[in-house]
Length: 339
Ligand SMILES: *Cc1c(COP(=O)(O)O)cnc(C)c1O
Image (cartoon, rainbow, N blue to C red; front, side, top):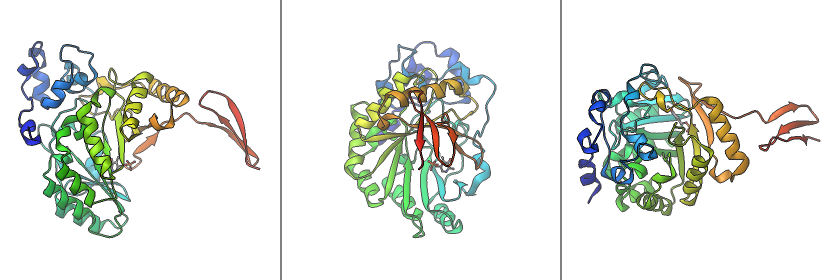
């Protein structure tokens, strides 16, 4: 089955999920359902605690009040249609308004019923030309890899409209949602645009199934470096064990766990939020016991240009010209001499 075929067979109708769906109808009216056959097969539909199921099956708690429509205040930073510039050296281009799967924790779920602005090659080229500090372009969405290989090629080419742009990046959840999309043809296209970094979005070890790992291997074999951004989600991955297993599975597939985000407080997602105290505790214990290869940076993304703030306990207890008193991950105080 080709990826387009698989996509067209995605589940958008609650009846396909079987029992207990009547209660969910008001939820899907506000936030429509969408699951690929791949993820439907991967999840345990009978088990409400399944970490894959929890990310894609609607929940009545999505209708609770609270949270913001645009939690990052992105709309104020649009420099061309669908192109955001929150940080001077990077542009983020929303090149597709669609996704193969509606992840229930999505921070852009406001766009599910009425698609937001989308950038084509012209908008990207114009944004790169006008914003002189830009050195890097990130293709995001929606799911950027729902574009055809040719459309993607044009947008990557437009991203290099000025020679000062040296880095390209793709933020994509396709290795999780529709790994069949990572075809040899797509990989050839991406390979031509190196240096290009590929940033995935795995939240749980279970998502690294055989098909997902094969898709990652194809990208890696083409010399494309792989990073992962996860979101800390209550009931999905909010434990040291879940984070360690995720990090280990990623590292074994050649993917560095890069960022772990505290939830962006988007309306309809707050039931996933993990208290900051607990988030910090998880990351501290993870770092104390596990390889640096499996430990991501915990971040909170705040509205506007202040943006991404690393959440770390302060290791610097005291600093003088002679040296610094440091707190180690195991909780010991050690003097590091400067001279
Ligand atoms: C998150 C984000 C980036 C990328 O930030 P990094 O820390 O470099 O990953 C760039 N632009 C926008 C608008 C973003 O929200």
